[in-house]
Image (cartoon, rainbow, N blue to C red; front, side, top):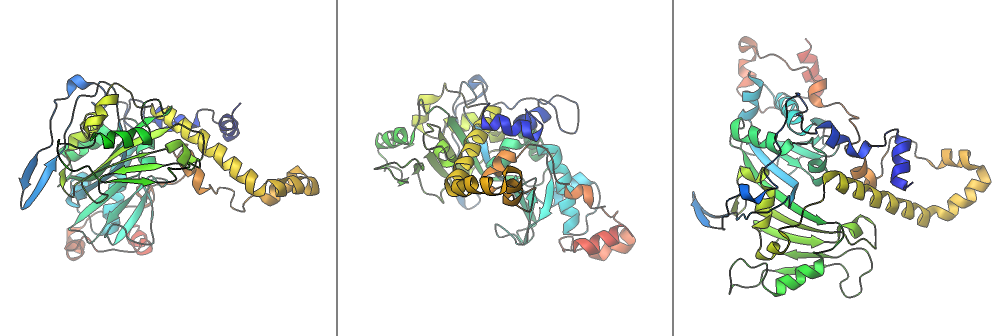
Length: 416
């Protein structure tokens, strides 16, 4: 039995890692109706396009290219979207008075889409917004206030991986049919080769030298940077970046398994990051990530026929590497102490003394492993009782529905 299996048994759930897959397998979290799978795995559904420059307002932007990918080539690994605050007025069907009202309504709707809502407020703002909140159990964040009446919703890689199955099409439907002024400001598409059979950082470096990352012949080679020890690899992992970090298209290849802590892992990940700084990112990229990944660079055609690893396989592999690496760290740093104190105190007493006082604490390295193992926190919309809008008494406050009210005052006012 592997360390991962032992850990699962101790947790009382041998299939805990599959929680988010099983929770949303083809079914919306809020209903029993089937969810149609995203159109991201069959090339015949995709019309090939090329990059083009278009004038939008006073800006010259570039469209994204896409090509048929015969299998599920890529997944979404990061997502930033913005919507106008009027979005939540539409979904609530009533007036919203202060910041808490908007956050509660956003939390309610986001749970319907992703399977998790907003859990806590951060002590500081983010991304030039005045205030920020935690989405799920560190699955991302929500920012609001001070940016043209918009709200920013961010899903990290962990958030994308643990969102309920079918979240892409639910989000697409929400943005295209309900949201006001929706915009995808950043999206990362990733492809994993768990065995390192056909891509590696060295493969990417060779294709760069052969102009495989150049969209047009005769142009300058794209910018390239090598991170990590390339001359004498130490097992800590190497990274190759292609392009400029602040540009609208940026690519990275890195040794994912080594990054997680396995010095012998061949696992390589390829990521393409699109940003709206100089690109037009269409909403249908949520449904066709494989096609847009395939169209990102000419050399990607060499692995069009490969299929991205299944979500459960990725989560299991990540957990195995992370847990084994954590065990090695503890043994290396505290192994001698543990051996001595086991004999000095006895196993039971030493284990009691050596454990953290916070028995629910999770080391930072293992938080991605724990993600999706079950809900352990209440969402804001389950705690806060929303106040019904009264036009006679709430007209003046409603004139500035972006004002912030403290949770204590708001709860007291709401409950009368």
